Each structure stands twice: as C-alpha cells, then as structure tokens.
Amino acid sequence: MSPLLDVRDLRVEFATRHGTVTALDGVSLRLEPGETLGVVGESGCGKSITALAIMGLIPMPPGRIAGGSIRLDGEELIGAPERRLRQLRGRDIGMIFQEPMTSLNPVFRVGDQIAEAILLHQDVSRDEARTRALELLRTVGVPDPGQRIDAYPHELSGGLRQRVMIAIAISCQPRLLIADEPTTALDVTVQAQIFDLIRDIQDRLGVAVILITHDMGAIAEMADRVAVMYAGRVVEEGPADAILDSPAHPYTRGLIGCIPAIDPALAALDRLPPLAEIPGVVPPLHLLGQGCAFADRCIEAVDICRKVAPPLTGRGHAVACHLHAAAAASEES
Amino acid sequence: MNELSRSAPERAASPAAEAWRMFRRNRPAMLGTAIFLTMLGVVIYGSLFGGDPFEIVWAPQTPPGEDGFVFGTDYLGRNLATGLLVGGAPTMAVGAAAAVLSIFIGVTIGALAGYYGGWVDNLLMRITEFFQVLPALLFAMVLVTLFSPSLVTIATAIGVVMWPQTARLTRAEFLKIRELEYVTAARAIGAGNGRIMWRVILPNALPPLIVSATLTVGVAILFEAGLSFLGLGDPNTMSWGMMIGANREYILDAWWPVTFPGLAIFLTVFSVSLIGDGLNDAFNPKLRER
Image (cartoon, rainbow over all chains, first blue to last red; front, side):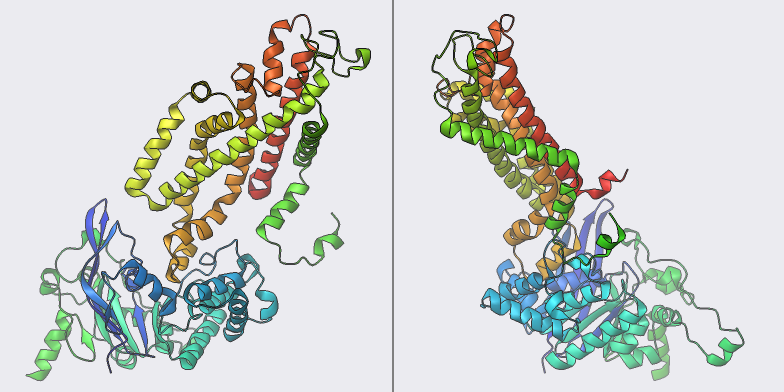
C-alpha cells in the first residue's frame, strides 16, 4: 500500500533579523491511510511549521521551502499551483487549530462558518449546506445543535468551539486531518472528550490523523506511530508502543520522564518521586551550530555529539543519536 | 436596570445588534441621531416643496420675523427660509457622495496594501502619502476650477482629497487581522485571497471603519460648504455654503443671512459627530469604562 502522505527530507527556511534560519531540517514523515501519527516536541521545535508546510500555508516571505518533497497520495504538493492547493485544503486535508477561542471568525454564526466550508468545495445549495452543517454539529456531539447552529463563537465554551472547528475540518470528509495541539487550550476533562471525538471520527470516516502535541499522555492514548521532533529535526520515529516502552533518544526519554507516574503506595506515604525535567530550553534556531542540537541539554552527551549531527538511522524504529548508534553497533558485534 | 430585566434570557445577539443596544443607551448619540434625522427630513421636504430659492420676493435684508418672513430675506430680497430648505440638499448630497467615494477608494487601497504587504504595500502607501500631503482644500479648489463646478465634480474633488485617512485606517486593521488565527483557519479550508480579504477580514475591520466613515460625512459637508463659500460651488444650485459666501460682505448690516445657514451647517456636522462618537463607544465598550 502506498502511503497517504509522504514527506521527504523537507527543509524550510525563514529569513529573520539574525539571517536565514532553518526551521525544518530534513524532516521525513510517512502516514498510511487511516493511521494516526503523533508528532511530539517542545514549543518551537518545528511541529506547527511541519503542519503548515503540508497545508502549503508557510508564509512566504519570510518563509521558504528550501528542499524536499511532500506527496499526498503520490501527488507532489511542493510547487503545486495555488489553485490546486486551494482545492486540496479543506477537501482532502482538514486542520484543527490550537486556540478554539481565536480560530473561529467572531462575526459570523458558527452554522454559517461550517456551511461556508462546504460551499467552498461542493456544489450544493445554501439550504443543503445548512442541513449538512446541522448534521455535522450532531456528529461532533454539540448538544442542542438546532439552537447552537445560530450561535456566535463567543457564546460557546472552549470545548464546544473546538467541536465546531472539528466539524469544519471534517465537513468535506478529508482523507487527512491535521490536529495542531487541539486540546492545549482546554480543560483536562474536555481534552479527553475531544480525543474521544477525534478517535470516533477516525473510526467512522477512516481519516488519517496527524496529532501534534507536546503531551506524551495524548500520544500514548491516540497515536499508532510517533515522530519526536527537536529543533527542526525528527530525532526519533517509530511505532508508538516501541517508543513509549523503550525510548532510544535521550530527548524522548526526557519527555517521557516528564509524565508524572503516580504510584498509589508512594502517594499514600506522600513520597512521590520528584518529577523529572529536561534542563534548559530549545536553543534559538539561529544559534544552532554543527553537531546534535540537543547536545547542550543532554546529560549523556560526549565529544562527537557537539561536532557531528547524528543522522536518523534504523528501520521501523529510527533514532538520530550517536550513543544509540554506538550501542546498536556494539550489540551487533 | 433592575435584576429582573438583567436576568431575562437574551437570544443570540449578533455583534451588530449588541452595538445597536449600546448605541441606543447613549444619550448624546441618540440626540445626534434625532437632530440629524430632523435636518434630513427638512432637507428632503425642502428639495421637494421648497420653491425657488433664487426668486426675489421682498425688500432686501428684511430682519427675521418681520412681514411674515421667519428667517428674513438676504441682500437681494430672497427668502432665507426657502434658501435654507432648498440649500441643504446639495450640501448633504455632496457630503454623502464624497464620503462614499472616499471610503470606497480608501478601503480598496488600504485593504490591498495591508493584506498583500511587501512592494504592493510600499507602492500604495507612497501614493497615499502623496495625496495626504497635498493641502486638501487647495487641491479640491484646483480640481473644481479645472473642471466646471457641478455637484459631481465637487463631490469627486472632495472624495479624492479625503480617502488617504481611510486607506491608512483600513491598512492598519488589515495588518492586524490578517495575522489572527481565524484567517489561517479560513485559508486552511481552502478560501482564496479575495474571499479572505472581503469576507473574512473586512467584516472584522468594519467597526472602526464605520466610525470613520460617519465622521468623514461631517468633514465632507464642511468641505462642500467651504468651497461654496469661496464661490467655487455650482452657481446654479443654492446651498448653505453659497448663502454664507454671498451674504458675507453685508454681515455688518444684516447678521441673519449668514448666521442661519451657518447654524444649519453646524447642527448637521455636530449631529454627525455625535453619531460617530456614539458608534465608537458602541463598538468599543471598553473605551468608555475609563
């Protein structure tokens, strides 16, 4: 089976005051139809830029796609005419944003906004579009959709707004749904509901999902496969179970260490282990030198880490780390 | 407001309905609306049934109230009441037409500049600045003198000198709004540039534009009066500005032929300003809670 989405060696650069910085440095991702790919990493590591690049929405200038390819069902999207991209957006690729507060247009009723998305891609009447908008609101679990269809965004709660966003994203039954931190701005209880909804829609429509998040818990819950990103590169990639059970890259281990593991016995004694943290922050992209971008924060870093950037190696479960490569080599010999 | 009416359920209020509710509670704005509607009514009535304002009907400079002339007569013995009734229409029509024209040019240029940015923005803003640094009244005078003064040329001249402000305001709004997430979201469902500019960004940029448009009407009315006062108006059309201009030399002998048209202009512009101010408050409730 050919992949639904095949991103290869994608490089995106931005012109900034500090000169040209490489926001994505050789990112490769694959996604099969119906599959869920989790993309994790801290803020500023290139997750959202990857999503925007797939949508063809990198602001240019200052952005520039410096190389690589993005294929959707075999069709090359980089360099495709804007007309074609406009057809694909919304119809074949739907997107959900982080901030449901600001991603709906405040001056239009939500029903009209859903209908708008339908009318852009399908040859149906206004009435028909409205009927479908009502159906979609029901699909995404908005209570009392007959009333809510005429509500303005400010009259809805964050969770309901995110449901409306999802309704818009799936209005044309896309094959790919990109969810860019869809629950970051929501209450924890609502987060779980939204994840349930996304999974439910996935089962019903067979849509493939790219879930962008910094929440390892969400990954454990949702993803089939995971790509861990750091400073514009994929540093570890593979099946979700493998990565969660035996993370190979120190950064992934750090991320997983940040999930609080609550042992009831210890909690009763008030002696929970301290929560792990990764020291430091993602370095500003213009200060990236040669070598592994994570080296400065890595407790295991050795000399070579600061000199040579490690390539992503391994099939199935791939890792970009010198230490791991060395360990694997010694195992084999 | 008592507790009962406060807790009364309200149906989904559109932003426009909400603004109208705020506006209605604003007394100066409602006063302005009342004055403006009255003036408008008088002007419409006058232009239909006012009679001939150029006709000489009585002794020159009859003071107001004498011989049955409520506002008196001017230096040629023309009835001021008729002039006031008839002279408002060109003033208001030219003011409104000029405002519409300047808003149309200003919004188009400002939207293109703000949305596309880059060299488009640079080019359009340099053009805007060129028009902005021209002394407006002088430029309008030149235009009117070049082309024979008629209501159309006057409205065009005023519109052409007033659009830069609107363009700058529109550009600023577009620059701000185009970065917001719902614009990216609109793009993500496949909306094109035109749709995003006019259907997504413009509706959100409207409140400040409506306020500015209202004030533009006031300024345009003043402009028309100014041009007529200088004798650059259409000589075959009676207007408030022309009445002041024609009678200004005799102001020491008779105060009324300049005072009443002046008052009419003042009331109109004042009411428009009150409305604009009220709209501003209605659209930006936060500004009022100082």
